[in-house]
Amino acid sequence: MNMSVVPVDVAYSGQLTRSVCDALSETYQGIKCKAEGKSISGQTIPVLSIGEGEKEVFFAASFHANEWITTPLVLKFAEDYARAIKDNTEISGRRAAELFHAVRLFVLPMVNPDGVDLVNGFLQGVLRENASYIAEQYPNVPFPEGWKANLLGTDLNLNFPAGWRLARRMKFAAGFTTPAPRDFVGFAPLSAPEARVVYDFTLRRDFSMILAFHTQGNIIYWKYDDYEPPMSRHIAQILSEASSYPLELTPAFSSQAGYKDWFIKNYDRPGYTVECGIGKNPLPIRDFWNIYRAVLPLMAAALDSAAKLL
Ligand SMILES: [Zn+2]
Image (cartoon, rainbow, N blue to C red; front, top):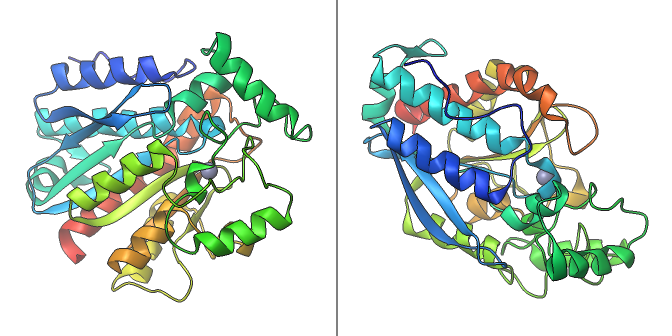
């Protein structure tokens, strides 16, 4: 069976993401799918799991609405990995069955389904009007293609309890003082339900490592403040080599209150933000294969590193 369940040539929506997750779990015995919570508009947020190992690894994508190409990236990897397990072959040079037994991978393909629906034109009526009203307060941000936030104008990667007050000070100083298409930190840490879903899910699991997928820049952010969790530099170098994405320190302006920031601070374990691809967000879906060529080996290397090093 070489049919692909994951389309990589269409605009994604929350609904398509749920359908693809269902199809993956029906097609591949190795993939399980479970709803883990809901977005503002009531869309369920599915999480896939693959593997039965002791080490848990988490991939999360589409925190930011106009970075939705990260959703097919992680879904395609889930499919390629599951197929390699089924066919007893390799994924990016590693025996899939060995990874399957050593690691349990969780994939949350779309943290922000409402925002993605807005950017891709799948949202109508009062929900779209409300977002458009928020956008009018920030005329410098193109609408809807500049939209990163959830539907109520909170930037989900600025809503985590790690330096949130500092993030607020910086973003307020830059003018993002009210719900906005991007860069509004929210009314309190975890005030956005989608951030809360990721947070609660993380607390319920025992992740050895997390990777948050964003666009763009072809770089990997691997640090939070002065934290340097055991093995985090070494694994960062492995991920960098696998993808040819250089390692960078997060620019000060976006160095606080992100998911990987909170994960590193709370657990002292490796957490990475991978900025996939290069260009202007939203990156066009025709960039998919070029980006996947770099991040497939990175994702496989992450599993391998969890199996061997953590
Ligand atoms: Zn982002």
